[in-house]
Structures are given as structure tokens and as C-alpha cells.
Image: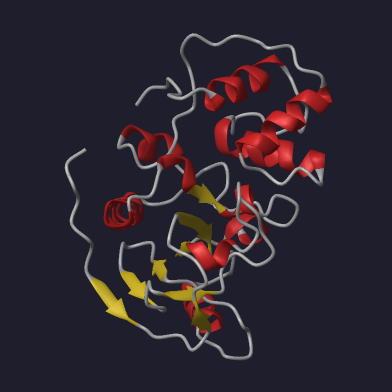
Length: 235
């Protein structure tokens, strides 16, 4: 893709950060999950809350920087992805303003997604982050989180090579048992200590039209394709 310029950023410093202990290799996308943007931003800047993110993207596309990229923001909590148990140490966290499932989950406006795309593209290029390490909060903390949720347009990011595509071509069913599927899911990157939560997080990300926690042929085919060197989707 043609490199996209970093969107304009408004500085809104949060005191909630510390030093990194690893290189930047991931981007984690969240929704704010609060009733108002103002409330979410205030909490991310509140020392007592002990949470933060590097960026917040408002519904009108305005981007705030709360924590410098070279610092460890406190956005992922207890989390795991692939070889990392301290996701905060190696990731940049982006909070996307949306009330979330508890307060009236709704589609993300075009202006907001345009800003997210420019921000993700800039970060990905600067740190040479792979598409497989651009993930949602629910991917790294499946037992606790559902964000950014099934309405987030991952397909749009995938077409710009900013996320892995949903495989759609040359799909084959490996007929894994449940334990075989979970082993494959763990190999792909998920924490499977809560199997149902891990399956639903996978579905929310790669098969959002049906999130039922059931391992079916479509889930097996999608996961097998994702484990191949080059997943083939509509990107």
C-alpha cells in the first residue's frame, strides 16, 4: 500500500505509563467502552485509575496522544499473544471511542476509521510490525474483553494490508478434534486457558456474523488457512 501520513495529533498527556522492557512489535486496538468520550479520556488520564493508552481516536477522527510511543502504556492488562505475556511491554495501544457492548455498541463512523487507518499504517511502517501482530483487545485477553468487537471493520484494514485477512480461498477442513483445534488456536497466538472465550474471540475477529463458541467446519477451515504462510482473503 502507499504509505499514509500520520494524522494530526493533539497532545493530552497521561501520567499512567512506565518504561518498556521490550521492542515494539504489536498494535492493540480497543474501544473505550464508556458512555462518553469525555469520561473515557478523563479515566485514561486519571492517576488513580492506573490505565492509559498511547492514542485515543474520537468519533470525528480527532486523535489524542496520551503516552509517547517509547513508553509502556497500561492498556492491555493481563494479556497474552504468541510469545508475549506482557503485551503492554511490546505494543502500542489505540483506544477508539465507542460506548461498547455495555452502553450501546454501534458502528464506527467513517471519519473515525479513516483516522485509525492512517494511525495504524504509520505505526506499522515505522516499527515494521507484521499484520499478524495487529490485533484486538479481545484477541490478547479473550476471557475478559470483547473489544473492539464484531462491528469493527477488520476487512477494510486487511485490504490495506494493515491486518490479516479473513481467509476465503482454497479452504479445506482439517477435521480437527476440539483439542486439536485448541492446539492450533494456541499456535496461532491465543491464550486458550478458557477454551470457550478463546473460540469466541477468534470468531469475533475472523467470523463475526456468528459468535457462538462452537467449533464448526468453517472455523476449522479459517484457522487452518491462517496458519499457512500466506492466508488468502479478499485483500
